[in-house]
Image (cartoon, rainbow, N blue to C red; front, side, top):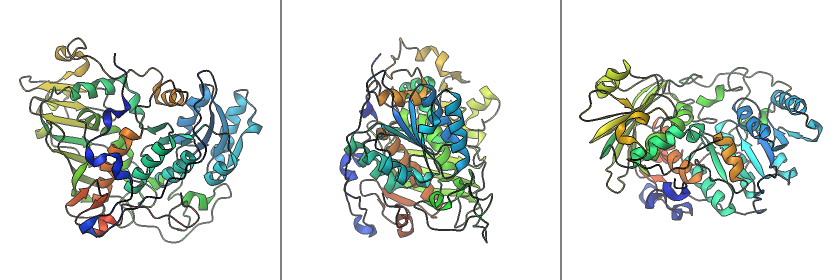
Length: 475
C-alpha cells in the first residue's frame, strides 16, 4: 500500500504558495496584506518513546475530548488554559487521579501568558471559540510548537492563509480537528472517487441538521455580572468589546455569532464536505451565492440557508456546483430517487455526489459509509461491498489509520506519521467554506479571486475577509 503524500491535496495555481505573500486586489480596491513571519524557536520533534510536553488551550467541552486521548497515551500535560476555571479544576483532578503530580501543571486564563511563560512546550491543542483559533495557534507555531486545532481551523479567510504561511515557515506539524479524517471508510471512499468511477462530476449536495444552538437572533440588550470563575476579557480575545450576558455566549452558544463563530457552515462542513473535497480534488471557489435564507440579521448566522459554491475546473473534471444546506433543509428527493429507493428517505445529514457515470451518497457527517449506484443500477449498494470497487480492482493508496486522529498527531510530532488533515488539506477546503459564510451575510452572487484573496465585485464582502483584531491581541 502506498504511503499518503501530503502534497496530494495542493490544488492548482490558485492555491499555490505564491498566494501567501502580500497581494493586491486590483479592480475591487481591497489590498490583502500578511505580516512577515518572525520565527522563534525551532520545532522539536521528539523521538519515538519520548513524551510530548503539551499545553492545552480550551480545556472543557470539545477541548476535553482533544487533550484527554493524548494524556491517556502517556504524553505530558504541562499547562492548562481556559477562560473558565471550572474545566481546569476538573482536569487537574483527572490528572491527579491518574497518578500524576497535578501541582506541576501550570494554569492560565490567558493563552498569551501561557505561551510567554511555558518555553518547554512541544505541542499545543486549541479547542476554543472559533475566533480564538488562529490567534492562539499562530502564536504557538511561532514559538516552534506543533498545533492540533479544532475545526474550523480559523474564523476568516485571511487567518486561514496566514495560518498556512506561518505553519510552513516554522516547519511545525498541524492537524485540524475534523476527526472523520481518521475514518478508514472516508479514506477509501475518497480514493475510489479520485479514481474516476463517477466520470465527470458537476453537481454536489451537502446538508446538515445544524444549527442546534442559537442563530437568527440579534444581540441581546443589557449586561449581567461576570461570574468570578470566568475571564470575560480573555473570552472576547481579538473580538470587539461587548457586555457579558448570562446564558447567551458561554458556554457553547457563541457559535452562531459573527464575532465568535462560523455558524453551521463552519462547524459541520469540515466534516460533511470532506468526502467530496478530497474525492473530487476540489480547489478554489470561483463564485458563491446564498440562494435561500431564513433568519438573516446583522449579528448571527441564519436559522436556515442554501448556499451555492462553484469550484474551478481541475484536469479532466469540469466546474462543480456544490450546494450547502443547513437548518434541517435537505435536497429534494427528486434529485436522489435511487437514495430514497434504497434507504426509504433522504438522510438527515450527508452528501450526494452526482457524476456522468453514477452517484455516491454518504448518510452521515464523516463520509465513511458511502453508497454508490452506477447509471445502470436501480438501487445503491455500500461502496465497501460493491464488486467493482474491490481493492484488487481499484488498489488502495491512502495509508490506513490505526489509532485515531489524536494519536496520528502525536506520532507526527515524533516523526512517525503525517497528519491527514494538515494545512495542505484543511486550508484549501476551509477557504471555500468561509467564502460560503460570507455569502450568508452578503446578498447576491459573489465572484471570488483566490489568488488575490478578494471578491471582484463586492466591497461589503471584502470587508469580511480579514478579522477585527482588538488592540493588545495582535498575533
